[in-house]
Each structure stands twice: as C-alpha cells, then as structure tokens.
Length: 246
Ligand SMILES: C[S@@+](CC[C@H](N)C(=O)[O-])C[C@H]1O[C@@H](n2cnc3c(N)ncnc32)[C@H](O)[C@@H]1O
View 1 (cartoon, rainbow, N blue to C red):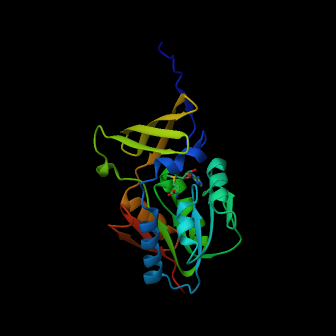
View 2: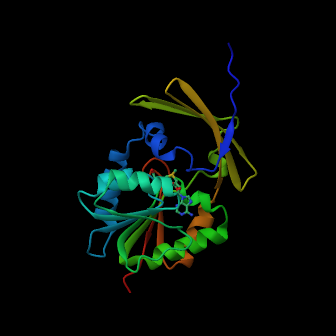
View 3: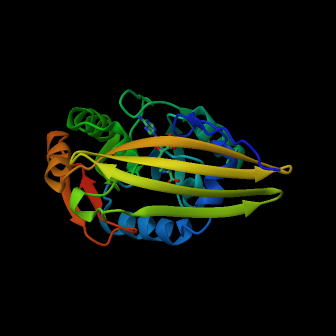
C-alpha cells in the first residue's frame, strides 16, 4: 500500500533542529577548525586575554572544542539551537539573541561568527550593523573572525547539496537545491527524518546573502577594524578583523 506523504514547510532552524543539526554535520571537522581558530588567535590577537564570544553559535560545537583553552560564551537567534547548545555545554553562558541587536555589557578578546551565519542577515545594511555590534564587543587588540557564505562566483550551476546521518533510532537525509538572483542565494532544503517506523518530510527555505569581498571588507572598515582575508580559512575564505590598540 502506498503512503500519501504531506510535505510541510518550516522556518530555518526551528522544526527538529536540535535533534538533527548535529547528525547532518557529523562529518564536518569542527575539531580541526577549532585548532585553526586557536592558532589564528595565538598568532594575531593582542588584547592579552582569552575570552571568546561566538555569535550565531548554533548547537555549540565550536564552543565545545574551544572551552578547554578559552573562556567562551555564545548566542543564537534560534531558541531550538540555543537549547541544544545549553544541553551540550550546561556550564557555559549561552543565550538567545539577534546579532543585529545584542549587548552582553562586556568586551571579548575574540568574536567569532562562522559557517555562513552572517549570510542570514541578507542585506549590506544589516551586515554593517552586525559588524559594528561585534566590534563594540571586541577589546582593543582583539579579533573579529567572520566566515561568510559563498560569493556568486563560487556557486556551481545545478548543484544539489546532500547531507545525511543517523543516531540512536533516528535517520536523517537532506537534499538542497540552490538558486540565486546575484545577491541572495535561496536553498530549498528537503529533509527526511525517519524514526518509529515513520518518515517525516519537510522543507526549509534558507536565504543567504552572496556578499562580495568588497562589501565585507567595507563593513569591517566602517566598524573601525583592520581586516585581512585568509583565502584558506577554516574551509573557505575567512575575514580576520583586528581592533586597533589606539
Ligand atoms: C549554519 S548555522 C551555524 C551555527 C554554528 N556557528 C556552527 O557552525 O555550527 C547558522 C546559524 O545562524 C543562526 N542565525 C541566523 N540569523 C541569526 C541572527 N540574526 N542572529 C543570531 N543567529 C542567527 C541560525 O539560527 C543558525 O544557528
């Protein structure tokens, strides 16, 4: 007998996020990336301390690797992501906030915003606002590290992304189509989550800005930061900003 399967649409990082995000990214080498972040901080940071704030920390995987060497905090817009991060790292200050409008009341030696998260802001105006907020939260001599989403020239026409994973009694698969209008790329992410003899189908539509290097550099400069683009980065290009000491 065939099943009639309703396909629902959910906002990004809402439906089942806490359960499936880490399964989908089980092959991402967060440990190696955290080691590269540590090296960059050792090589470039001159603020004298070891405090990190991760903006858009998701489920807290980077923070989990960085907490051994640094004092870490993080926040994310999605309550589901925050709940997962707090469950992973109950001793760490992790809270719900928007990178366009946050104030922790203190400054950090390094502010991180990784794995495309800045792309969700979608406009250059919002990019400028978020960079100014991050710079305000950075000590003189400290760093702001931004790993953006792709540039339009990085996109492969017709590309379909595929991630999958499984856990205890749960199987997840996700395929995403990618279209773009030159400024924003739209990812229709088709999820299938199987457990308890059923498969749940749903789609999340993710829209991310295809910021140019010039736009991101301009946002760093407007925020009063010196900026260098590391072409290798953690996986892809990484913007390393530094707040002048004087
Ligand atoms: C691809 S995930 C990256 C999460 C984490 N940095 C990692 O690498 O695992 C993007 C994250 O950005 C968050 N996000 C999107 N817009 C945001 C905003 N305006 N403020 C804070 N977080 C935001 C999402 O909720 C999501 O957790």
